[in-house]
Amino acid sequence: MGQFDFSKRDSFGSKFGVIAAAAGSAVGLGNIWRFPYVAGENGGAAFLIIYVLAIVSIGLPVMLSEFAIGRMAQRNAFGAFKKLAPGKPWYLIGVMGILGAFMILAFYSTVAGWTMEYLFQSITNNFQGKDAATLSTSFDSFRTSGSSPVMWQLIFMVLTAGIVVAGIKNGIEKYTKILMPLLLLIIVALVVRAVTLPGSAEGLAFLFAPDFSKLSAPVILEALGQAFFSMSIGMGVLITYGSYIGKKDNIGNSAAAISAADTLIAILSGVAIFPAVFAFGIEPNSGPGLVFITLPSIFNNMPAGYFFSILFFSLLLIAALTSSISVLEVVVAYCTEQLGWSRKVATAVAAVAITATGVLCTLSQGPWDQLTLFGMNIFDLLDWTSANLLLPLGGFFIVLFAGWFLSRKQVKDEITNSGTTKAVFFEAYLFIIRFIAPIAIGLVFLFGLGVL
Ligand code: PHE
Image (cartoon, rainbow, N blue to C red; front, top):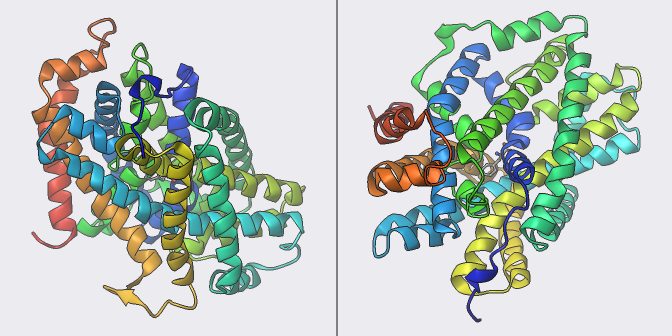
């Protein structure tokens, strides 16, 4: 099907575009939907501390390594390793990334579909007058119903593919530059509302007053997995995006800004959600349905709740969309550059294949929930294994590659733009990716899985 013309590679047009696109990838359902329920299931505040620790000490260095590898190679997540390490098996990281894209986007598009249904329900004023118990039951009956969530999932995947097919500058960058600032504004508005609810203190205490007796090896593994998932690291999304970053941009600064934005928005989501959880008597550990039950309850009880609910679910959808495009781009970049497919064909084929996997996830919430492995249905299996196994494992190999395979000079040149910018943190960074990160990921992994 022809050869890709590397001299015509697309790229981001501005520094803000890079931040918007990469923060768009990072900030997503992981922050607003997954973080609150995973934190809720794992004890709240003590989990939050480990999570933030994982971001700073492991996540940020992994992110910077991904940017450096991508920009150095100017290739997709598979091609980058083929180019930088010809004849060596490092390209398997790229293979894992493509596998990860399928796993993540499958259950991600299920939840994004729920978001669209909830946007629709907001517009038609469907939450009005319903108490938390009724909202909980109606969420469950929708989630398990099969056809309706599948329909929304298909629509969502068409939207995702519609942006990706337009390319980097005219697709991904163009949309994320508008959508991300909006997202921030709305979260702040919701936080203000949540903390002024009667009974909010209990929710804040759950999030900020740590009870360390809740910590265990599996909880630490959850926190690490959540950090990886939330930052979009460990599967080549940021290698791919990094390959579109201009040679003059400061990737160290960008990585720091993106990590900070991602962490802030996860915490703000927790602050918006837990006070409401407690104020409305919902169990904080009620799993993936948490935000779909609590938020409608909040909106029911606030002035102008109708408009806020429309705004919130549109923005949850936006958060999902700006992340899902980054996942699809991993596969599309691979198909165009390695297989020589046109962008149109690559996007169509990748989207259809991923959607097919996604439909299985959606059906596993209802009609097919008897189909389980290790006690988890397909949805939970993909959610748990991608975040807690695949991404940390990917991150483990990425830091080994940057820390031990590439030379110190190669990495330093890439991060400092050949010595034109300062990187005072470089020695610390190198020490982390060579020793701390691989050892920490390895230990958390082995203890978390009960191997040690
Ligand atoms: N970071 C995204 C979120 O928080 C999800 C994601 C994971 C995107 C992995 C890309 C890669 O929702």
